[in-house]
Length: 212
Image 1 (cartoon, rainbow, N blue to C red):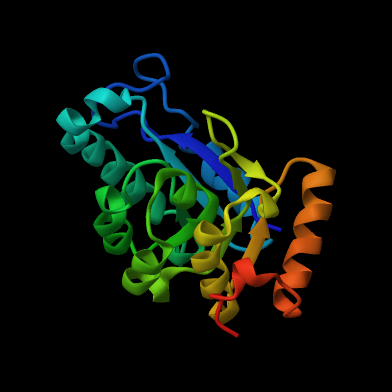
Image 2: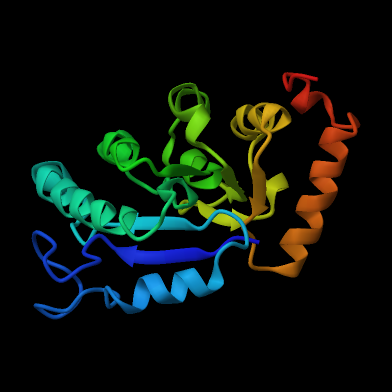
């Protein structure tokens, strides 16, 4: 299993810019955070989800400020552990290049959330080409595009074949951990059945472009 850490970019009191917490208060007390994580590690790779409190329609105007906050937080966090690579920063709804160079500079890893990439139209092939050596963990879940508002964290078989195929090709060659990020027993069961069929080569013609 993995330890999933959800934080605002402003992890520490001195972070640049505004935070979702009251002024002068970190999202997680700097002393409490390292101690609590140290007590729990290591189950597998912990992954850190970076969310911005900046609205998407104005995001492009404030990326520099957002990056400053993220850089400071990750730099502070990287000093907590002897090996910062045990922390994986997760791909979310923004282009990972916004933060990729900071993750590399802090010697951290990358958690590839395949469902988030599919939902937002990003290429898993391009991400793996650039960060392959830094990726120990993949979050796998389906995306249902059957309604006007696509939903992620659904059963994997709900994802159109042309969209899930690149992810399955990557997983066939991946040597790290693949975590099914599903919050419903029915979705888990149908996803396991789907993956068993895929990897036992009993899939339909829709998936013939998946490499053996």
